[in-house]
Amino acid sequence: MTDPGTNANPNMGKPLDIADFTDLIGFANASAALEFLITVKSGIRNAAMSLTECATPEVRAVVRNQLFQALDMHEKLSQLMIDKGWLHPYNPGEQIQMDAKSAQKTAEIAKLPLFKDRTKVLETFDTPQRPH
Amino acid sequence: MQQPIRLGSHEMMELHELLNFKTICAAKAKAIDGLVTDEQLKALVQQDLQQSLKALDELQTLLGRAQVQ
Image 1 (spheres, each protein chain N blue to C red):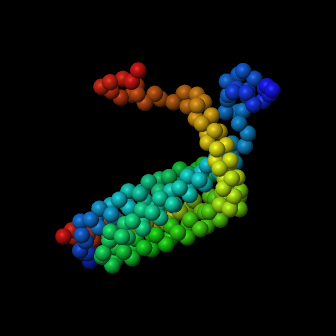
Image 2: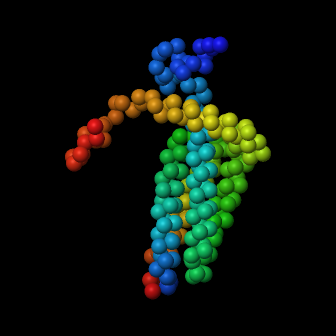
Image 3: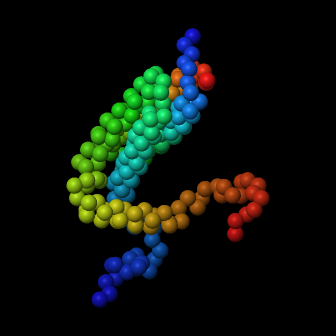
């Protein structure tokens, strides 16, 4: 049962190219939304933890206000992601499948030889030990 | 002139950490704004950027008034 479409190299023996990926713009939007969501969630944790370390009323007021702002932003962002189909909080199976797919797609894109025309950072500085 | 505010040294540290976090939030929000094309997502990113900038102001004001004990 060999299906050429699902082999290790689905691109007929040729190396993958960025042009082989479809809907990259939609994928970029979904990835950016996830990055944003993770940052908002970290912000909520950071602010909440800071609040437990602060005693001065003025400091507490500022941090608490920023915490509530972050909670509001989380509510709006997660609702948007649910509406767009980027987040499935009531369907963990679907969520895991989607995340596994985007992990694989991201890894494939990350392995492409992109940005080869950019300045090689390691050659613009004196480095005591060059990596092999 | 702004009134000085007495802070514990650990409170200074917390504010400093929050300041660093919000700085990176603002930088990332600006970068992400250039990446996204979805209008609704873009609106939220831009709102978050404005909130981060306001948060930076508030934190810097507090840090500027701080008198560590």
